[in-house]
Image (tube, rainbow, N blue to C red):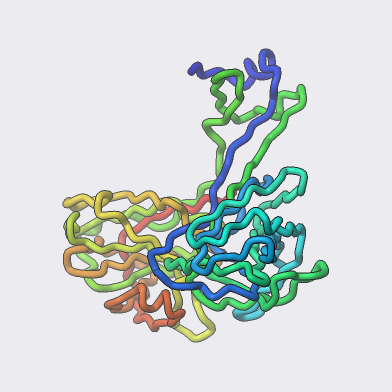
Length: 370
């Protein structure tokens, strides 16, 4: 493989077409639960699209099996309109009725290829919805804050789909592959800012610049913040533009235990009640990523978590083996003693925080705003 410049590509490449796939969603069946979506059109708010492309395929992990030659299963591209409390309105951009002879009378994962001729093009900030109509089964429930929204009815007629309600912080077990493409004319602007590799006459990007925003501070004040057993966030570090949380760094004053620590990274949203919050999504740091040492440790969030403007990033140090961060000052620290964070998430419970306006904890995070 040879690395070359974009100018070389413009001069020598006969094909100036860049293709790169993105996978959204989750097929986990770890909950063992039926999501109960038969008769509904459903989307996972966490699986928002961040680039333009076309839907190549959709996979669903069925808890209830569909019935071939009878099932009515719809795919929708949905664009958000406006929100009112827990309700969100959408318009239907595109729809595709899956040929029912493509479905099997089986539980588990089934993958449906979406023909390119259907023109199922999806754009930035849009969603893929699935309508589970007559005899089309129902997917497993996926835990972990995928934020399921749904509306009664599987065949949404007309342009305005109506109001979807947030019925769970969990979601349906489905994924979709988005094929994004960038084409270029003879002008140099098509490849400007791209690093290119050439392999078997195919042009593929190895770097695209995203707009990264860094929040927080890792200052070492020499004082421990005593974070054992608490969920903590700094209100000063409110996110000012929606995007994807991709990395979190913590400056540990007390080292965590790699084999017994329990640390989660949490997206936190405010309610209308002062000092009361909820968790739309979270990420459990793998034990293999945790080191038994003090100082700065950086955790990559894979897959990244969607975070909206006005939300916060918090860290839950679940037990006394999860370490504790250095204290910082003036970052408006909120904290709550939680013993079972997943219970609050799965049951859509809110929780109340205490407030230390002059304190904070040493955390820094990155949000990619594409």
